[in-house]
Image: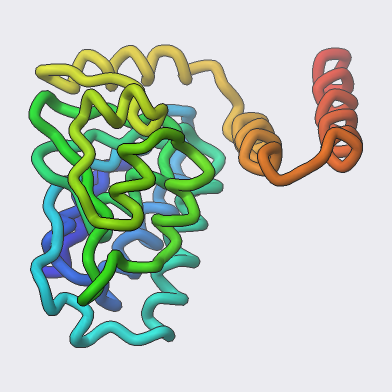
Length: 220
């Protein structure tokens, strides 16, 4: 098993499986489908599972580079992305969750920064974790590999909502995104992702360019 399965704009990720060429290909395939398919509905990523010790045995820097590029591509799709987390989420499951726009946790879900031997894995999940959330639970998780409960993840800004059943929440997001332009969504996401590392002066030009684009679209 690859740990990643593709459906009709639905991606199932088993975080207990290590990164593999097949898992990279599966993420790229769902991105292709999301870009080719007409409409503005969300891409839903179901994540669960965390890897066991020794998962890095067949992992190389070259494979990690391909994986990170695939995750980055999903993160920048011109379509809203939704993660639905169940049980414990680590490894590829946690990494893909951090690359989505909206995160839903099913009651009982928890999150962990995977161990890479004698310390937590120093992959890009740490980068996204530092940019997206705050608070002691996240620092402890990043440094010590402690588990983040769903409620603590909500309080830290990592998860949007905890629900017993995710279907209703996904339907609501689908309805909210029905009239949103994918290209325009991607522009606004990019502005938000860049904001934490830019000064006002550096950000101003990009935001004014986006505003100019919006004004032109409104009068077209």
